[in-house]
Amino acid sequence: MSKPLIGIPLGDPAGIGPEIVVKALQNPEIYTHARPVVIGSAAVLLQVAEILRADIKINTITAPGEGSFAPGMINLIDLANIEPKDFQHGTVGAAAGRAAYEYIRTATELALAGRLAALATTPINKEAIRAAGIAFIGHTEMLAALTKTKNPLTMFQTGSLRIFFLSRHLSLRAACELVTKENIMQTAEQSLRALSMLGLADGCLAVAALNPHGGEHGLFGTEEMTEIAPAVAALQARGLNVAGPVPADSVFHLARTGLYDAVLSLYHDQGHIAAKMADFDKTVSLTLGLPFLRTSVDHGTAFDIAGKGIASAVSMGEAIRLAARYCRQYRP
Image 1: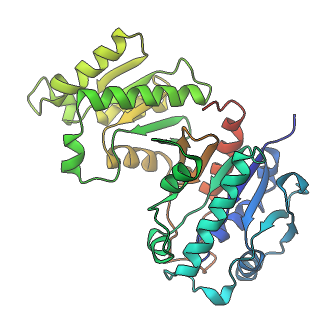
Image 2: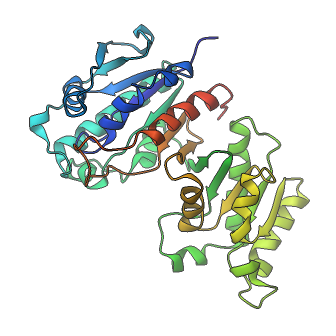
């Protein structure tokens, strides 16, 4: 069976995206999992190669299947939409934001046409996207609009630990207000469907507690008794494989050791801290519910080190590997 074609849009040229792509694709092990296809600009890749003093070979292609997938070869669909003179590393710029969006749009079109099995994306900069006049705040919003998908779901994975989120980019106070029976039931059902998309149809989802020690029967908070436990009980009554509330200081460890297949984190930092403490470099974000699988590095453009040749490509390599691992059984 041939290895899957994984599309890699290059990200913001002013950030570390191009660098981590070049570094990841210099690792021969990547080619044992996938046939990687970069969607970007040859001029940007050549600039990175000069910074890294890397001897890369660029094979410019017009369609993903035309690539020559040997270690050391970067197969590129060259949009030729930006030159190094058009941007400065570590600086927000409209030209870089526009180029990054065009990479994503082209990769999405190829995936929708069935010419790519999945996408493994690199960082974009929200301010640069806004400066380019593009009306999306981030990757997920872009992909949802380009694929006409409602409510795609984010899952983090690091090693065997998988994490879903009840809420993400909100203040802690606002996030706590969303810990309701209705919201938990809806997100848990969505999370279980997402696990099924990845081939884990019988996966067990643990719902994290909100308060210390799970509230200690109301001593440290009542949300476990009034919202979380009733939600779990209602889901269980419908035959769904859900457990909880499990105290947050142990639930991620228990999932990592195999007791649960995934955890529903109740707010942004609860899950992010757990994943990044487990393995910061190998944490990968997956977007589920799209017509195709999308994985992503779990870090930003790192403007403070962009252009210096010191960025780690571990997460990029892991994103490509997970895309290749899951895309065969992915069924949205």
